[in-house]
Length: 211
Ligand code: IMP
Ligand code: MG
Image (tube, rainbow, N blue to C red):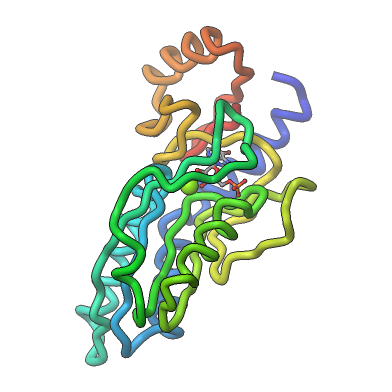
């Protein structure tokens, strides 16, 4: 581990250990405040978004239970693919999920794991707008600070993260590491997996690893 990467892992540790679920709860509060009182269709972008989606939905449901003004909430799923290994590609493909036409006239909350170049979200928003939803908001747990960004910014952002490839908490590297929650046992397996795929890895006691 170089001293530069060590410092970075310390920053990340502080960020994610500080109040990871707390941030998701605050996002839920902001979303209910802005979209509340109307039926929301939460659209989960698979596969990477599923853990954040599940946690966010739980917080919105809890807010609903504790409020006299509850938000009717339904869920939809879409599967997109834009990545090959750790490189964002120019083509964003819809490779499964519910029909977007079901969202016509609806208030849609798109739930994404991470925005990097912004291309995936811009493509999805273009496709969705062809179906004329009533309102569309985007929440992304993470936004990468990268010079490759198109400038696109989601309506709600959990954390801004450095320009590194992240895995864990449903984010994958070629389907690896999605189920990652760091433990000593898993880290030793991870070392081997990283070696196998010629990845550099930084261990940190947090939800994510930078590879
Ligand atoms: P974009 O189109 O460049 O904004 O990339 C967004 C999509 O690429 C996300 O939905 C993720 O699925 C994937 N992605 C981007 N960065 C990472 C990463 O660091 N780890 C895992 N997946 C990523
Ligand atoms: Mg994603």
